[in-house]
Picture 1 (cartoon, rainbow, N blue to C red):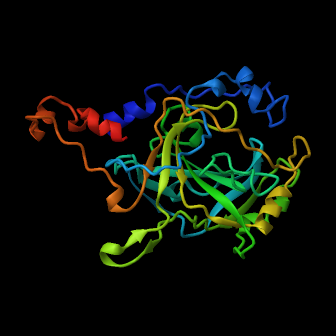
Picture 2: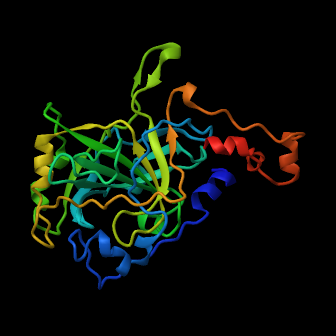
Picture 3: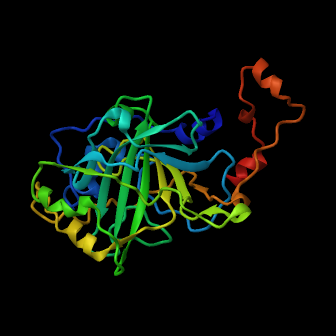
Length: 331
């Protein structure tokens, strides 16, 4: 990732805050998001998540790329478990077999490894998602956590701003038939308990690129996403995450939603629903958009007058450090 992008993303980001074991938190009035900041200082920070995403389309910066995924095509071992007041599915296979992704705003050499899926669901079909898309909340939000391959684990990556990437699917309820996957069929095994349950499943997430058309008209129909710098959406709200929220909403059947809502939280013995944090102020952050068609992409910025590529090597600088103000205004 070039220096300009690093500065824009992380210029005012805090590091990881370790949770205090003596503090309990939840989603009720007395321990919910409205009081998290009193117990966890970073929950009152300026780059918090979730947010309400912009409706108006914007051009795609030249440095943003389509996300490409590997390792999802074969079954892997995952543990379904209640964790951080949500249903989670955590990778438990061999490290060398972890699914991963490349692209986004990262250099071609950078790879992010899959760690877990975290599910937020509402008590009804219009209150489950944490992020707001097109001014609307939807039935559920599936958050997929990845970490930079330079780190040995997600926990280690959470100590460094920008080392955690979260890829979001906002799920829309439907009466149509949607094939149920093995995770939903095993939810009853974690009902009301802190114990996990292992399953072997091929995730085949719906954000794997799909294409329509031929030749010059060939284009991806599910590759467009929002990108912004943010935080974990639960305490300690560490401001370390790079959020990717897909614009296309997968459909989730009401049968699957009923199964998710049937899981009882082992801590308070209530259905594990309405576990979404309210949207936070965007503040100074810029929400970037990746749109896959070529006509949506901005060209690279022009070099400064009299600039030659060999000058960057002589001065030990990256040629993209000097960006005209007119170009930055587009971003």
